Amino acid sequence: MVKLPSLKFLRRSTDETPNVSETASHSTVLDVGAEKLGKTYARALLAATQADGSTDAVVSDLNAICDEALLHNPKLQLAFQSPQIDADEKCRVVDRLFGGNTHPVLIKLMKVMAKRGRLGYLVAVRDAAVELFDEAAGRVVAEVRTAVPMTEQLRGEVTQQLSSRFGKTVRLRESVDTGLIGGMVIRVGDTVFDSSVASRLDKLGKTAAAGFARQLIEQSDRFSSSS
Image (cartoon, rainbow, N blue to C red; front, side, top):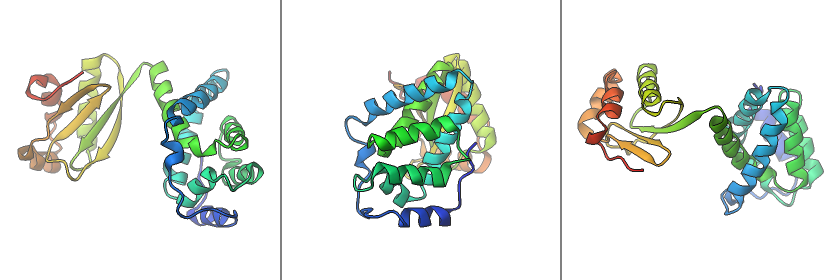
């Protein structure tokens, strides 16, 4: 897995890059063509890793760059997106920050994207790569929203029950929604299990409700489910 440089190093690197707009938006990776473009590069990336079996490592590195380096360093994301910064400079930033710690296939892809003015789409590429990787491995992704962070016990219970229900390996994508009125909301594809009942909040927060997930999945008629 990629070992990311310190935040201080990241700040210094992007500070040295000229003409980065502090007010640039993140619309580059959110526009209409982002999903399509993300899938195009993601397919190329996964295809390049299949021969040597490095897909796991590359996806892990890509997740680390997007979830740690870019998420916590807006200036770096802005630099990747900015059309005012030339491709060679972006490639130098990629080498300086990630060269030697990131799989060479991913470094090559990032440089190709930089030269084509597409490096700002890296998060879209990651999202598509993870989706395609899960699909190829026969996994399903369950998005789980809870009012409080899940414990290991509850996480295991949810994973087990969902795996049994869908007959596939399940990967959880967790998020905490403090506005949620108790319980949890699980989405798998177009199917939603909603148990947001205020009376269950205390039980979830204090004991992790070992049997809660089982009730949620097995007694699905008690919750709103759509497909």
